[in-house]
Length: 301
View 1: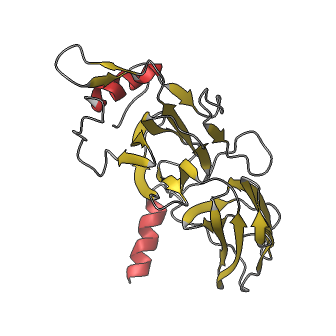
View 2 (view 1 turned 120 degrees about the vertical axis):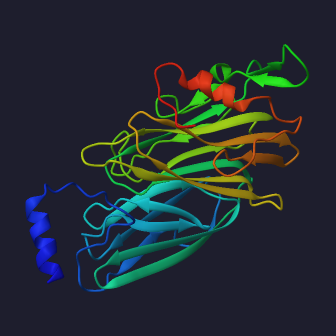
């Protein structure tokens, strides 16, 4: 009786588009075969790690990629996938999983990179196809922090920070932004990843934010930020932030990073941590964000 009632309700009410959730599953009913042609293992001196391969079921899009535990979703085109990622110093364990109706297949390769450690890396992905979760990174400059007019401490002016994003992919201090360009186009919507790397980050406070632009029936998505500091060293620090995005044009602050020098850094995640009160942080970060988003953007901060 219950199926009949449900069928009647569905025919009487207008159907709404359901948001894609999680990783889409391929339509094939035979367990897929996934192969990696790169990396081939062994040693490399390249700062960029090529991940390339094939999956036997061309309906699987995307495949799930993990590099040293950092998760990505890679688009496939005719059963092929290909993209370069910043390599970590030392071991790079690359795992690719392909999922269809028959189950999950995986393959793995390990490449060792003889390169200097990466002090600062940010990776932004989403769980929905056809949306832009643009990554925006604000770097410290000589003018971005000044003494407070009243009392002790310093204040931050976000508008005087260096802004690194899709239209400005190189910062004056050496930060590099990698567009989501799987498939060869300038900047594809979908899962990401957007990547930001700084190989010699100057001391100071960094702001990591996202700006959300959905399309079609994509009402909302979940953005995931992975921050890695001093990767490949004894001081390695990792933080993950998962946050829902729903309003078009919304700017959300995902994390603050305070690079202290000498292999030390602190991370403040507004959705997870109490506001920092240490003297090493500028005063009133909330006010700094409001000044940034007051120019016509909505803010869910």
